[in-house]
Length: 439
Image 1 (cartoon, rainbow, N blue to C red):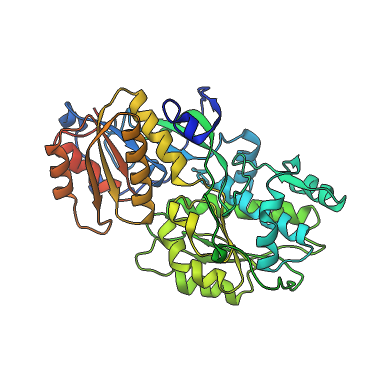
Image 2: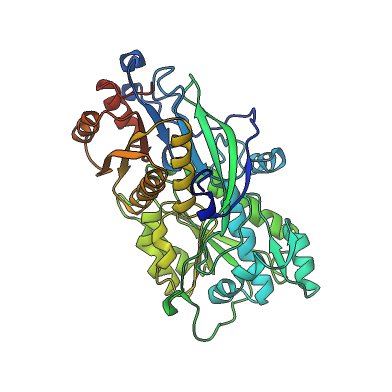
């Protein structure tokens, strides 16, 4: 969402700017060899901005103070104490809750869709997901929603991740983006939350709609999880798995779906290098999954979306943000509880502008996630009158990023938006060497 000049474009619903006290972060690499060195070498520096892909706990990776003042954005509403405690009951070791709420909501709405359809096949679930998230009586808990459905009422489930209300292609039509800041300990803490609407697509193609007969399921809703247990995004795995586990536990405690307990089958999505997701998705399909929650990475989801949807299985990602899914030929079976990059791109552009920076560099990984978000940040920043002095896409598997950083240095940016995953640990030291570390 663009809070100033582009607010009319995105139809802002609300802005919540209350400071909150609790910090959060993900597990970091403890290898001392990856530490940045003395951050005082970046006395000149630039203002750095992170996004959801690299907003993590770096306390074990960089010297104290290296990231102090870095600002970041990622999707998700403020996490309430009650939900945090319920997540910790499932996994007491959790240190990061990122995309846990979205994973929980993905599972709950899949179950509600199966109740509304009175059967559990993937097509049946897909046919009801929009219905249970918009246009009916508001409900926020599985049991209360089921009671309304059993009374013959339409429902509108609002989740712990914020409003969902799927649009015509299965993406949230409104969502919340959190704004965070890093302290001297290289951990991030929330500053404020912004909720805004996301424009729907102009038209929906036939290959984006469910067609043909909608089969009945086998009577047992089976939820498959294709989430990162390995790779650069493995820090997202624990909260995502915990979110699904919590939802399944609560659904079954409330009587299950159509009289039977929900079952789970689990698989590792990896991060695309190597690409293990297709074989893991095959395991879920063979395990009779009716709906797959995942993947976390947009690129990984794109590598398996045909395999999953053509098998008649519904797919709901808790973390995909690439705009590529807005027009993808998904047979009407792909959904996501995370918002399109249109929203985060606008919020990031607005944040940089509000901080007073006019000449900005964007350094992003070259994949469906990085390119889509980078393009949206650039678009909204330039529409607001700013100048993008450098726009670089890099190979996430490169041994180093010296060439990209040197090119960026030559443009003398005031601020840098870094759209990255775990390679952030390599890029930050190179920025510091050329005087572009956090100012």
